[in-house]
Length: 315
Ligand SMILES: NC(=O)c1ccc[n+]([C@@H]2O[C@H](COP(=O)([O-])OP(=O)(O)OC[C@H]3O[C@@H](n4cnc5c(N)ncnc54)[C@H](OP(=O)(O)O)[C@@H]3O)[C@@H](O)[C@H]2O)c1
Image (tube, rainbow, N blue to C red):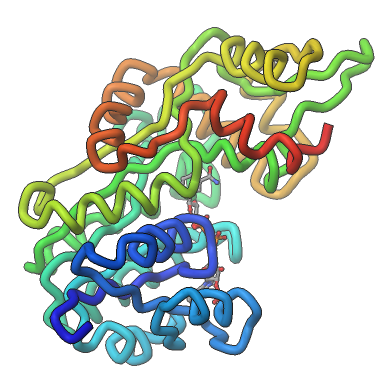
């Protein structure tokens, strides 16, 4: 135990961090131990991680001193921000800065920053193909993460910028499950026309992160992009139809229509899907399922993911 390298994991009770904590705990001879960071060590989810063998500590990404304490003595940290908790890119940047500074102060040997593109490098604010949101962003929850890369790159600690992909889990938790249209048919809806969307099981992000830590220097000071599979809306709908044994079609809508949907963040997601569609070659090229499979041999395909989670998808 004493010789193990400790990984301090932000978001440990959530999707990405939870996957990493479980990957570490499932590999007791792997040479790593998991320190799960939560705001509330007495929650059921935190207790569950403790029972599985994780060390559980409390910290808040808004409080740098608490992060420094949570990172002290660790070998590495998994850093992720929580946009959908507050919908604020400004908070996201502040939280990322706190994490990078705390990691530096704690003298960590390797930090993974879970990031996404700053889309303004492709679509400047004066490009009116999509609206500018919150005055200075095109895709707020992407741009703030990409802009924050600099905190980690400039920190001087070995870092990996991990470019994640669309979670297929959004079909369970984010209200994106197939819905009945006016024609009475079930359909999944994206504003992507016939373009491809890199997707991944959220759990596999954490498993890939574990692979990155295990590989030591191989992925340090680099950007690594991961996906489970890269599929068009039509291909995803075909997989749904096969697994559920009923017709589920792909409903391609214009990005303007998606932006006008009545849920919080629809404009942000409409811009995001448009960015992914308009820059398909770049975006898909930056995320390689083969790299992800090398890091995590258990990587799921979309069909395998659907089979595993069929009962959780409300159809
Ligand atoms: N949905 C997608 O398709 C997708 C794809 C790529 C990237 N992302 C990004 O993923 C990020 C979220 O990661 P996730 O999905 O792993 O999160 P998640 O499942 O929502 O879990 C977040 C966890 O973080 C903890 N947390 C929340 N606020 C915190 C704070 N102030 N300080 C410390 N811990 C806090 C919470 O744990 P406690 O309550 O225990 O503290 C929570 O369990 C977002 O920024 C999103 O943009 C999402």
